[in-house]
Image 1: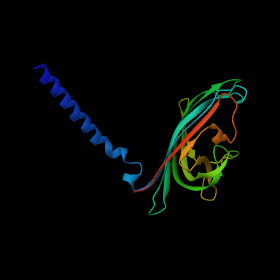
Image 2 (image 1 turned 90 degrees about the vertical axis):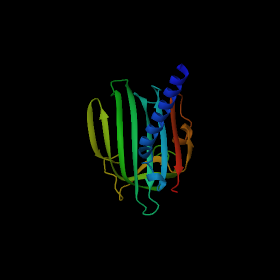
Image 3 (image 1 turned 180 degrees about the vertical axis):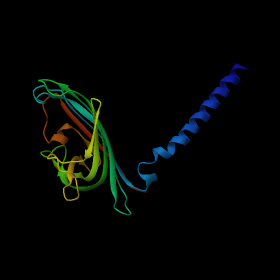
Image 4 (image 1 turned 45 degrees about the vertical axis):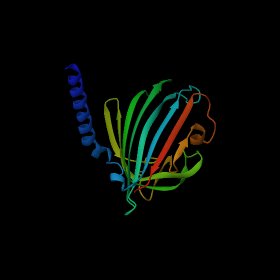
Length: 195
């Protein structure tokens, strides 16, 4: 009798798992529209724990980015989520921040990995979108901008510093030099063509 009861519980648990997977699967296929879009997935992190090299801005950020392109129309879009934390030293700001980015259009063009002084590469350039920041209970939403506060547009594309070539990019590849101790950056780019 006990064995039959255990078997019944196992069968019901299996049915429950299958039902859950069936219910969630359509949402999981939302990115890439069931394989009809070219899709890049990017994981990245940047940590700076050196009080001298980071000049009072210790902390880091960690994030995920997805770029999609419709091969039939050429239309592009993307999403990104980042979380960061900055530690106060010398009176600077501190705390955790979350950033959600909705990219409405982008291009791939010659740029630089990491920041403008990084190695030259083909990178993603944002040409439109919005950014929402969540910091200390406050929410700020506005257009994606360049370093001077000008909105990203087709006439003013903004280099993301994210390489379009799939692969793993370590700290030296991101900054173009071997950084001092306490600084680490990692970027992982994966690509799945439509099909």
